[in-house]
Length: 145
Image 1 (cartoon, rainbow, N blue to C red):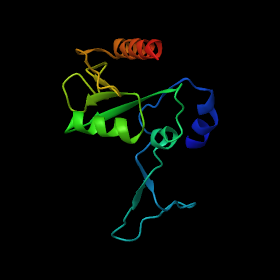
Image 2: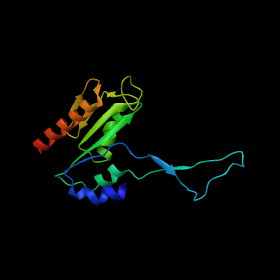
Image 3: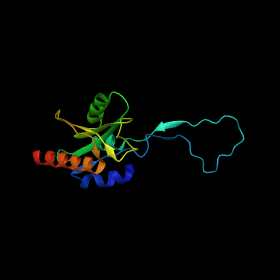
């Protein structure tokens, strides 16, 4: 996915980096089926490449990068850290485990934080409406640029 994103990023004025494909991947991959036979089996995981952070290193001034932060604790602090570390212009924070939010729901409640310190809290609503709020926020930011 990183290679594909890298090839297209130069063409983008706005890049929305949704959830990572995986935060971790096995450090060894077997080309054969791993068969039963031993009692213990260990799986070692290593972090995957952070596409938003990598591409954020070379973001142009005319580009706007948006990311997401799904958090379980210290949401605002973690979202602000990600905003800076990944060189994002806007981050959408949602809290896992919150009633009516996250993956197992058709609704969500998000807070958007922008690089200039703007904080925008939204009530719980259908995910399609959350997407519309995000595009409205991006449109406003592009108009302000």
